[in-house]
Length: 256
Image (cartoon, rainbow, N blue to C red; front, side):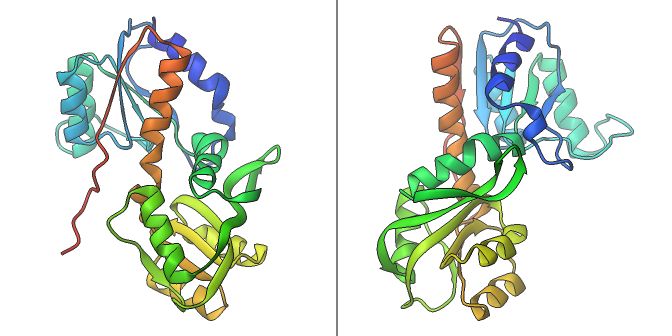
């Protein structure tokens, strides 16, 4: 199957017009006419991921985060993005990213489902009633400490960071996979007891806690790694002739 045909099937379910204005999803490197029989899926196009894609014979690397966000004036080995682009093009690997369009149409509901949230609603609308994040009721009332443990278990995490009173009982939550600083005030306005997200900075965390809303920082990768397995299932169901390989779940940093 041609690369462009695979992209068409992906964009039928996750149209790029649902991406945020600042985003850059789509085919970032490669040839739509290239024949593809093997796909590698990962969250980011790191050097290690590109090595793995080349090693397994993939002609298409499918990532969540775009390798290119801003304009590029030159593609050379003088910088890490240029090196990666040149490496992929030489190896015949196309690179396609599906970012906030997937956040809106896939990731938010998937994450809310993993937490068994009920009565879910969109946290912040992007287009046609769809949007970033979800709010809902937790499966039962629990302390903030128990909620942190619950998030760890459901997303298979070694740790989470919590802002707020660990003994406070929580019943409602907002979840916004990825970087959730911009979702703090929408979550506060929605009246939930706790926001579950990633990349929460010091001031946002303490300010929200002072406002009465707890925050659980599960990490940017910590929640979004669910993209990899979800897209594997999608491709294997939609295009069963493809060979699909995935990057292993592995935190990109260590806490010591």
